[in-house]
Amino acid sequence: MSTFGVNAAALAGLVLVMVIGLIMYGVLAAGFRIMRDDGRLRLAEMLRRQGTPERALDVGGYQAAIAVRRCMMCAHKAQCDEWSGAKRGMESFCPNADFIARVAESR
Image (cartoon, rainbow, N blue to C red; front, side):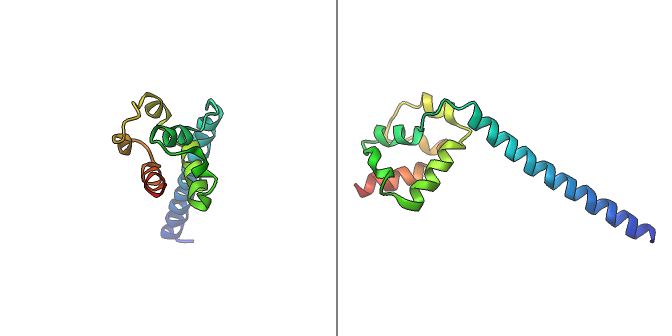
């Protein structure tokens, strides 16, 4: 095998190890966030603060399921807890701000 072939194989191996490492980091970080979570679904609280009943999640279907998953995996739970509940301002940290606005408009 030529030097080029050995170098290419080594580079491919390094890239593969880096990709696997990034995937493992993501899985471990998400798992850590879930494990240290207090169990509250802040999405329901956000909807309540906006004057929308929690039952909106029951009829939301697929989009509601995605919003619940985003909420469970969110890295901004401390900001969510500190938020005043004003009608605006959550857009800067909440990954579900668009979903909450759509649900609030449709009720």
